[in-house]
Length: 301
Image (cartoon, rainbow, N blue to C red; front, side, top):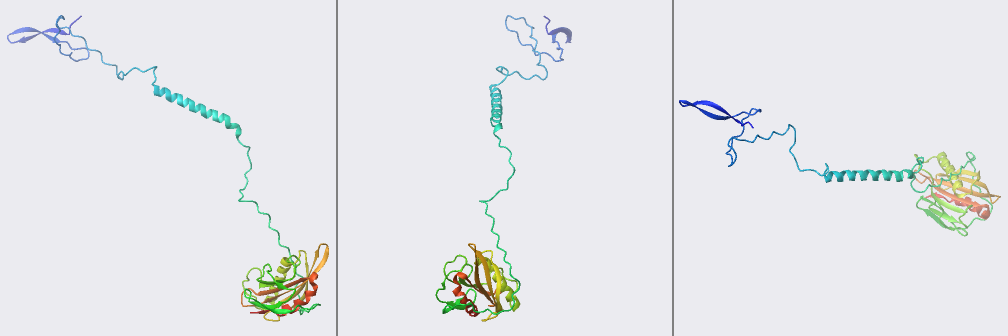
């Protein structure tokens, strides 16, 4: 084996002396200085240096088991199990989808029944001027007066068989017999319906208001299907207003019947006039005689 030292002669002082000079290795570097050789080894022998690691190589680490760490193995197994669970759920429930249904509008609460259409009441044209005549019979006794503070109207209080009673849509009322149709009632109150933009102050306007009152009373206080015939049309006797008398003919239980009725509307200083109404069916025809004197007693308070 060739040593790393080469003999060179250098002048020292007046003569020459042979020195051993380290040989440069192929990489261009001097080898490490020679350490003293332990006993038993010849001087000058130097072990060659280990070759450097290849470029880009990483330092050697601890050996791995099977090429993968336990954490990596657990992660792969968990991912496979999750994917299998998703596929299983999809397969089990894919056949449970309900059939497509057409979109239905959302309804709040139970469906309300259709509103009953109001009956159509047809009047026989504008009534001609005619005084309200007394009808056959004996008028009931007057036992006092009625003061309707709600409508600002007063009128006669009739005695027996009349008695005070609550009449639908009126503030004060009197009644004979049962409340079922056809009724025998007297009622007072404000003119039903919307408040007019202009208060009826003239006689033509008050007559129009009285005709509206007739339509309302026929629709609400007489049997359906009735036909109207005018019996009177005149100025009110007890104040500025208008009185209309009329007869309502209808069929009840297959038989023809008649009710005699009248309304008086009075100007009481409001946008709506006050109203007094009476109707008596032929089952109480003995009370028809009460209609004319009752209408004549109406006056503003």
